[in-house]
Structures are given as structure tokens and as C-alpha cells.
Image (cartoon, rainbow, N blue to C red; front, side, top):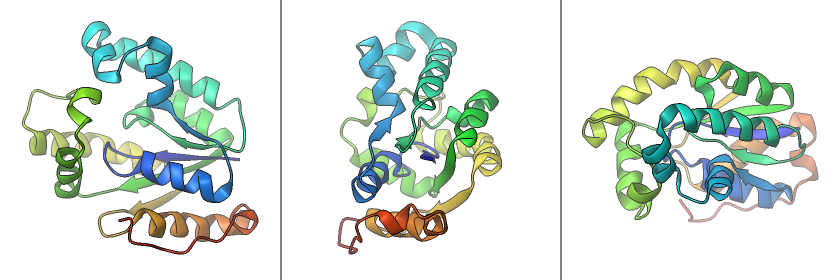
Length: 187
């Protein structure tokens, strides 16, 4: 079973995914990083040169490839759920965990991420907070329909999020085989 982390940008998918993969002793995959490595440029550069349609097409191919393996923790791009094909593929072999954050927290995290402007393409021509609010209004119903579990990340550390995911997955026996992890101040 794969664990797929879905949600808007800057909700913690990559950070949580890396720690969760380490705890569970599983491979970590970030679909945006796979795409960037495959095309030899950042996602932002790819979108500028080729457009969103080409990006979504490449993203679907990468999701299909990632879904052929098992036992991974996968951080997905924020728009992955816009494709029913992607959602169907991920659900066929894994759990989809929606990491959710408020627009204000997303904005703060994006502004703190020094690489954000270079690696993340603008989604609209609006200002940052207006873009976040607009895109969340569009995407939240998709995340809601796709998710097996939703975690509000605003006031939680990365470790606390991993422990919540682990508590939910313990019924499947995945967490029971993992190393126990003590919460820290990483948040």
C-alpha cells in the first residue's frame, strides 16, 4: 500500500512525506521532483515554456508510473486531484491523506520558502493571498472527494502530523511495523 499526500502547495506534503517515509522505512517520492528531474528544469520553468496542459499531461504519466510501485510515501503536486484518472490510480493502491492549511498559513509558508518563487509557478495573475483563496475554493472539493483522511496542519508540527497519520494507519498494520517516533520541536 502506498501513502499519497495530497493538498495545496505549502501544506507540508514534502516535509511530512520525508519524515513519514523515514519513520516507516519506506521510499519517499515527490512527483514534482520526479517531473523536474525528467524534464531537466523546475516545474515553474516547464510551465512557462510548455503551459499547464503539457504539465498536467506529464504529471499524469508520472503518477501512472509511481502507482506501479508499492510501499512508498508519495508527495503529490497540488493539482494532482484535478484528474480523475490520477485519483483512481492512487486509490487503487493506497490511502490518500489530505494535508489542509488555512490561506494565511499557506501564505506565510510560501513567503518563508526562499525557493518558492523559482520552483512554483503562479496559478493565477492575482496577488498571493487572493490566488490562494481562489485556488482553494476551486480545489478543496476535489481534495475532499479524493481523501481517505484529512489533517489540519496549521498548528501541528511535522512529527505530530506523522503521528496522526500513523495512528490512523495502525489498523492496517503499517504503523505497528514502524519505528516509534517521539514528537519534537520541528514545527
